[in-house]
Image 1: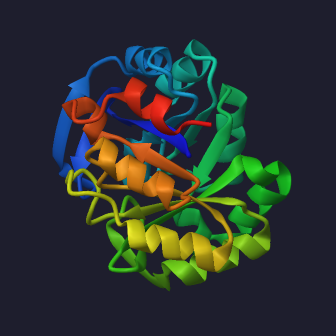
Image 2: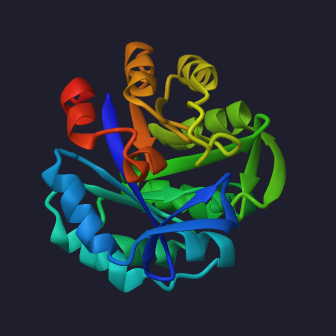
Image 3: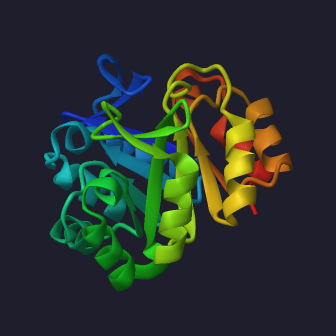
Length: 238
């Protein structure tokens, strides 16, 4: 299983939210670039970066930080948050990121998503964020009315091979991930599922690994010290 340490950026700082709510923010570092380097030194083979300002407001103000992260580490960096146009996607790849995560645009403007997949293929990852099984968009504040499974099947037909499945109710709560939903989604769609939200311990990671889940994003557990990244990487990474 592949592990993706998460770096969520807001106002240029490394933060974590509870259930994706901007007003429930904890700042863990004023230097996301240093955090990225530390994760790499601890054995991370991938990084997951989210521009939270972009996710909530639909524009980017952390480009310089993202670019610095991409150029400060040798491991692949995937980035999402607030990407609404194909120019946004092109720009991120120009900055040096390896993969781009698209979420809201899949629902609001499928043509942009399809164009991105056509141009970049498997370098595009679908971010499917759910609350009670229904996809939420625009920084998790609006319900789309589409189920996670329907959207997953739709993007598979377009040509996506990887999806990030986030149970918003679990995110930042340190109560364990929604393993059953991730397993079901991967099994029924045949897509590579990266589980996100709620990982709080090595035991959670072991369970996801044993279930055959393709990948897992770890956030708050790293910053709170309940998961040692080096130990986790040695435990499950290919």
